[in-house]
Length: 278
Ligand code: AMP
Image (cartoon, rainbow, N blue to C red):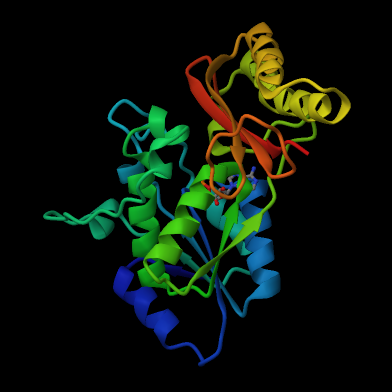
């Protein structure tokens, strides 16, 4: 496993590879957990070379968000990655990625303003910008991303298609704790009581799936039941959205293409999760 500190080093390494070699890339913000490692294992199994980046991207955090306290532990991350046969770990600094005078940003219009984008203005512009930069630096064939960030995947697939990047995204399933909580670096913010309350996200999604398959309830009625379950756990709902899984447009009638997305505050911590309705 080779550690790469500079953009120039990373760019020349991937350009020098044997023609036809496939590069699997896993972009992360570090503080790795089994969800991240599942993406690394998939990249490893399917590509010749695996590259992981660790970069807490300031451009995707709002002014009042958790950029400063976002958990970081590079030593621990490298120890975990060294057990996964990773070829290169790229960890640039903020100054390298956004040097003084930096002015260029990419926006995917429309879907970037919905759901997570509505509560976090500018968030997806930060995500699309950093991923476009990382794709130009790492030159991956395939990029492995988790469905945990469902809207992020759809926004990035749109950007890659619209801007004629040849890199493709491989969607990887959400990895959960044994009790159903979706793994997330932000789960570290939760105290013991909140960790328990946080189960309401996956439980509300399971409730929606059960009601959709076993009853004739309409989406609004299912949403009411989810709301009640989350309020009982003292969660504060940011949004619950029933959407078309490809376009992310909200739907009134449930079909096999419906995905349920939600964001809920547990204390001050905002958590997201999603599941297909059927
Ligand atoms: P992050 O470090 O939070 O930016 O996430 C880096 C990548 O890991 C993104 O593609 C996420 O969707 C993915 N990821 C985060 N949590 C999980 C999880 N619980 N299961 C699967 N993928 C995940």
